[in-house]
Length: 386
Ligand SMILES: Nc1nc2c(ncn2[C@@H]2O[C@H](COP(=O)(O)OP(=O)(O)OP(=O)(O)O)[C@@H](O)[C@H]2O)c(=O)[nH]1
Ligand SMILES: [Mg+2]
Image 1: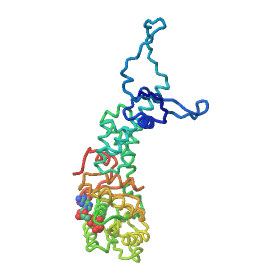
Image 2 (image 1 turned 45 degrees about the vertical axis):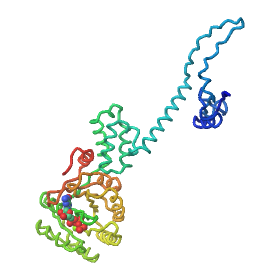
Image 3 (image 1 turned 180 degrees about the vertical axis):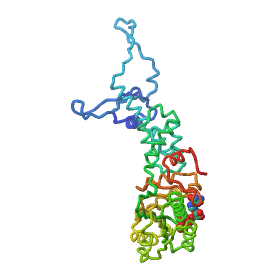
Image 4 (image 1 turned 45 degrees about the horizontal axis):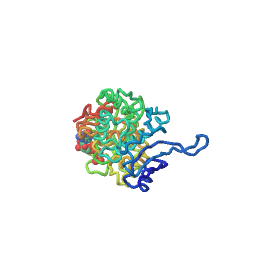
């Protein structure tokens, strides 16, 4: 027997559930509308759906009986005027569309092959930049932060214009990279800078390059001190550079030597301090370096990071060295990689500013003052060092 019933539910899904369990799975929907229920004077009312459903398909197939007038003649049926949608209907439709949009987005972001993206990412150009930064191994949260800032200043037409988008994203990267702070020497000041970092990243080589630059090009009085008495050959390595550059080299064997060494280099414009490299997992070695730095009290502490460091390791490294209170970053071995995300991640993970990039083994040539413009360009694929 055919049944037609009206169901009220808080959403379509719930209504369908009620209908199917009541009328069976072949139930058909005749009409749906949004209604508001409850509340006082229209306030606090809930949005509900009202669904008219039938259990028999025949209901839609039987042609409607034409009413007969009392005189037995067929009455003419006035044409039914289509109802004009009210603003409330339009609002309801909009709401439905938004729900569907959210569902699609949810599928797209969380269940598809693609990584989570921003709303703007539906533009192919925008997505291309997103992927580029992902390929550079920039931390995903950071990419999202960069792109969400970018999307705030974007005009709709920029979204299709790859060049405009490139410039806007590059500028955002530059602003996020922030200030560049190389060694700054003022007259008559004994600037003492220490270099710390993992083993083999290029601390000693960087010190030699800087010693050469400041003596040869800037005519400054430079001295070097090494506190790396741990690695075989470390003292000789620095002493060799010292002889070549005619720069004195002091050695600190223990904290008792710190004062003597510092007294000897008092009249120098720049004192570069080399420390032993330590594994980020070797807490004892890091503690040793910390004690040394506490005794020296340098003007600045430069953390030396290799650009070849794997994305996941950079956080651990910076974390392990945090207690050494470094305030600048040197990035080495830019010539050995084309994945520049590590640099960006390192800058954002610390409050330290970038100072230098080193780009090869040659002393003194392969060093330059870091550049936010260059790094942003490298991240966006404008150029590489290799
Ligand atoms: N390709 C390349 N090699 C570099 C760069 N900087 C340093 N190196 C090389 O990296 C190796 C290690 O350099 P060191 O300066 O001894 O490194 P370190 O950090 O002092 O090492 P430890 O004192 O043992 O911790 C050497 O072979 C350097 O020539 C660079 O920018 N690019
Ligand atoms: Mg060294």
